[in-house]
Amino acid sequence: MAVAAAPSSVAAIPTTYPPRRAVVSWMFFDWAAQPYFSLITTFVFAPYFATRVAADPATGQSLWGFATACAGLIIAFMSPVLGAIADASGRRKPWIAGFGTIFVIGACIMWIGKPGDPALILPLLIAYGFATIGVEFATVFNNAMMPTLVPPEKLGRLSGSGWALGYVGGILSLVVVLGFMAANPSSGKTLFGLTPILGLDPASFEGDRISGPLSGLWFIVFVLPMFLFTPDFPAKVSVGNAVRAGLTDLGHTLRELPKHKSIMAFLIANMIYTDGLVSLFAFGGIYAAGTFGWNTIQIGTFGIILAIAGTFGAFIGGKLDDAFGPKRVIAGALLLLLLAIVSILLIDKETILFMKVTPPQPNGGLFAAPAEKAYLLLGCLIGMAGGPLQAASRTLLIRLAPQDRIGQFFGLFALTGKVTSFMGPLLIGVVTAVTASQKAGMAVLVVFFVAGLGLLARVRQE
Figure 1 (cartoon, rainbow, N blue to C red):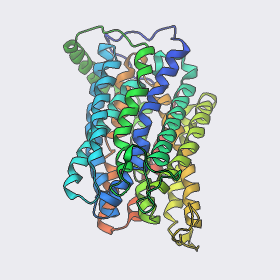
Figure 2: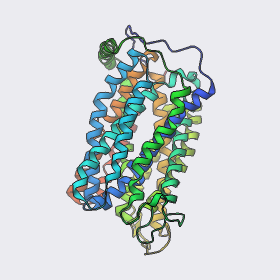
Figure 3: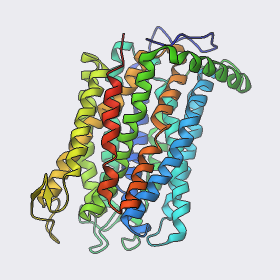
Figure 4: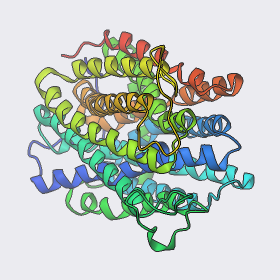
């Protein structure tokens, strides 16, 4: 059941919808933002930081976890407030532009991360935190535009198609970095057997470090269609009045929220399973680097394959969302993720599900060892499930929340996606640091997916 709406200055959701060009332009936000998550947080810079900048992979994993936790706390507590203010003012694009600028600056600073220099660890983690805050806040306001673009019965397809387009952007950015920029330091050649472009030096890992500035530039270029062709609500009140009205409406929403058990259950479930998913994506590359000794090219190739699987998963998930409802899509995705993480914990270099296998050999070829193939298969399963989980979650929120407070509820959605987001990385960091075992750190994610699935069962969608 949707939360009752209080009197608000928010503009009504239109009864007519913009042309297809506006909808496709909005979808390009996902294309513009995804390289940050593909290149920085998962497949290139995070593993590079853990293995080349930090003292060792376990220390790097724990430090990256602590930085992710700090950024997550800030995002958690600010998102509902900013969403309420945006609802009151009626506009979303200025917020996207402002936080997008913070993201771009933070991403570009990550270029300074030279290998083996302890003095750069703190500045890099701060830059990573700013970039994460910027891109996440911009995403809150971009999501809030969805109900103004298509009728309710098409929201699942819109959300899934947006995620799928984002995955394609992530794939292309990985191809650019691995094929033309990041080189194996021993051979000096990229994945395509080329000398790195732009004079990037393999010895100082400039091809890995360029992923930060490239993510920022990519965002600037590809977010432009949304600003040019997707309509925004006109400003209705001044900034000061918007702040006051937004905070008043947010207070009313929070007071009413406990009366509506279904939406409360969903927000808490989202809080838990999103924490697990974000942690799984954030540490998947780091875990592979430590477990199998993969370098940037191997991890990035893994990322391309995973993203291709995610593209199909998000697109198919959008269709399943419209056909069967977002709740069922979320439940199915959580079961697949739970299966994948349990299986990953039963794999290392020499064993698969307790069975001895041939370990990876030097110069043995890309993903030649049985354990590497198994990890690759499970990564594809995670990709297939992760896209639909995120896309269907924002669709379910739209179906549960009052439309005149959609920004507030996407703020609360971000809150529940971030308020405990420090817990996953923090627990992984702490357990990894205490046990000096990456496998033990990753094992905590099982609890997040099981708990999220249990709480989702309490959600009742009208």
